[in-house]
Image (cartoon, rainbow, N blue to C red; front, side):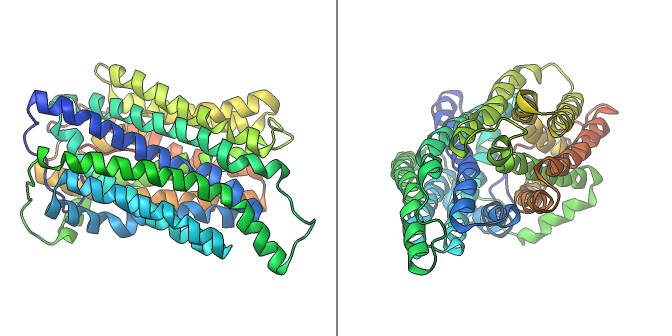
Length: 436
């Protein structure tokens, strides 16, 4: 739940909860898939606008910057209009962002694409504000860890399916899309408008799907009442940062999201290298679903394991595995190099929901809501870490850039051990969905 949103109340009645769960899982699928499309948009825009990695990864800065700017206003809106109305508005905002790719392509200017991505991400943020408390409401408090991880599997299903379709639609023309050897002036602008047509087609089709989803959610808008939290200054929630466990968790969310997005953003370029799999850009783009698919498999498996195992130890083990795979990929060649990098996705699987719930565990309802809101703002790490990794790639190389996410995972590993040292505090865990 985000700062200012209605605090989760009692779990919804079982029959009604089952009906609404389908909508929540669909929301997880949608915002996961839309976010992961950035991984195939980045190489396309990099080629069209002759960008460095540092510049190309500003795509993630524009997208994840919305979490910093929009989270609190979105939460206040959800508090006013309710969960399902808020979800419908979020989906319509996402649709508007998709349609902005049309004038962006006509302008043939990179900043206009960044604007379209920011608007799209603003809608994603609003949808996540809704998904947070709904997961808490639609089930028993004692199964939040497992239920949230299971819901994350649908998020990962979206991150697996949409990038594959996006790679076919968006990257297919890169292998044979050159115009003149070095077009300039109006010829360059015309070339960019033509080639960006693939991006426009993909996002226009996505806009149509989002419109249908918004209509379906709007029809269900009366299924949940508008339960308002006590009116207060939403910035008061930041007082929760006086709790070291919450601060540590927020830092880990910042670093984890940044690391996961950085690996996904560099994946296509990395697998295209002669020292890795030496694939074409289009072929490498079709490998991205294996990265996100690993997270999907891990989340469905983790939903069962987390009912019995220590969440802190599982988190530490997953982070340790991610570090080992990144180091292996950065120091090996060929098939092993590529497979090791793709396997990092499996290690990512349980990290976000586990960090989120461990950071908030033991808090009362209001404190958990405050902590959840502050931690969700930390998703802004996806706007900071990827460009940093891109700068390292530009200066030293793509292999060296893998050490940036490896360092982030090391802090997550430390948090897992920190929370596993003693018995977990009692109380209601605080839910929060992974942005990808």
